[in-house]
Image: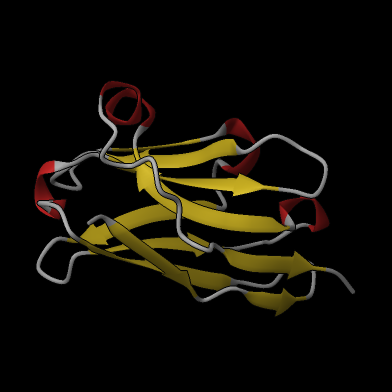
Length: 122
């Protein structure tokens, strides 16, 4: 079955950096567009960044533009999210999953991983 395992989160001071990873298995990873999402306490889960199946194109949310970069290594079935210039408002649990269009058309990605906690504070 689909497994998505996020890692790389932690505590960092404002202005710091982290790199998140998402190890994927149970599906043909290289054929799916993928996304990073995040959920802050008391808020809805939101889309942070998306990447095409080949990694040739990415999009990031306005709130993280210029600070976050998404990439993937299809040979390793792994997604990455490089986060620079972190702000307290970036504090959230970060998840990976298929891009929104894919998720809306298949039950393949109904299961979410445990996520990885990112805490930005001084």
